[in-house]
Amino acid sequence: MTDAALLFQLSRGDERAYRELFRRHERAVYRVALAVLRSPWDAEDVVSAAFLELWRKREKVRLVDESVLPWLLTVVTYQAKNRIRTTVRYRRLLAKVPREGVEPDHADEVSRVIDAISLTEEVQKALSELRPDDASVLLLCVVQELSVREAAIALGIAEGTVKSRLFRVKAKLRTRLGPHRARAEGLEA
Image (cartoon, rainbow, N blue to C red; front, side, top):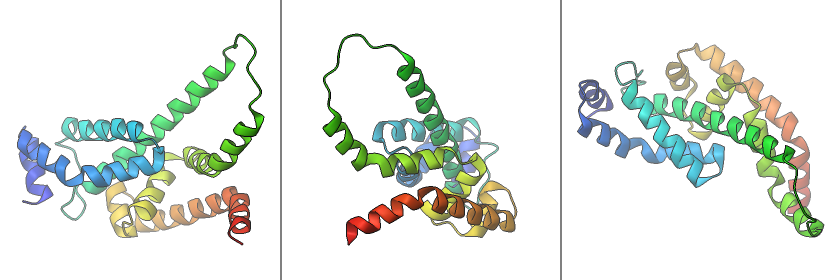
């Protein structure tokens, strides 16, 4: 049964159709959430929220080539970016809370850990600073490997807009992550 047929049944409240759409697309949606968030727990929460939106907006979902997957990927991308923004705000708040007592100096360990994860954090930070429209195009075209046409249909924008956004985002990320590229090349030598 096609996604279009299942979505039609879902629009009539058919829970079996909902379970089948979840079974079909949960892994792909989870991979995108995990790629953005780098946390299995957060990714699971975001996937749940995306599928809840599928249920809530079942009569308004836009299919792309008879598939609900591009719509789900767009929703999970927005959900993931919101989760990142929330986490950043929470960490900033925690950093402002005064700490009692003297902590031992773990500078060497901290330095080692920071070096090991700095690239991942920089990538996440760079992604979180993207506009939601740009991040959606990047994730649909690069992570999920949708064609420009498929991404344009999923987002409801022109193909030329997808191409220009993708070009602009890639250039911005190259500039932003350039120092890490040089460091990685130095480590490989």
